[in-house]
Amino acid sequence: MDYTLIRARKRTLSLQVNKDGVLIARAPYLMPKFLIDRFVNDKSKWVEKRIKEMQKPVAPKIEYFTEDELKLFIHNELTKYSKLMGLKHTGVRFTKVHTYWGTCAPSGILSFNLSLRYTPPGAVSYVVVHELAHLQWKGHGVRFWTMVKKYYPKTNEMRALLRHIRHGE
Ligand SMILES: [Zn+2]
Image 1 (cartoon, rainbow, N blue to C red):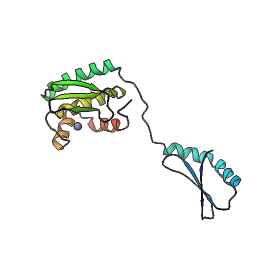
Image 2: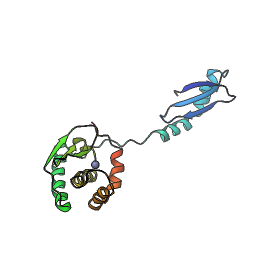
Image 3: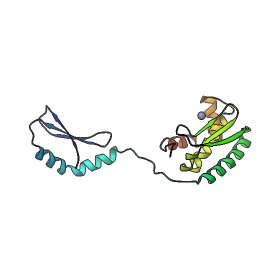
């Protein structure tokens, strides 16, 4: 089992798994290496368990849509929600950027990231409602969120989910 050895002014040996999942052994200056190795091996079950706990959950990359399916889905959602919300966009663009899921330009053109195909339909609907709401409210103020949540009640759930999925491919 791999570990990083730190010699320290201390009497006993201690093990720690840091936040990156790296095992750190802190040992007294004079403790022979073979004793440290043995100690680490004896504790391997505990170490493996700790490493698993420390590793942040990464959402598996699931392809929910092909690009064409995503575009069609977004067009349908835009038709549905723009009618419900009484807001009209002037155009739609699809992008491949790494910084956002969607944007709303002052001209009323809405852009959507094609990486949304790696997010479930509910998340795409949320982004559609979010961008449509920007036609009415520019920033992310209280009135903006009130509108988004009114038309997409699972907003908080989808925001949390999107934080775990990367924008880029
Ligand atoms: Zn926004």
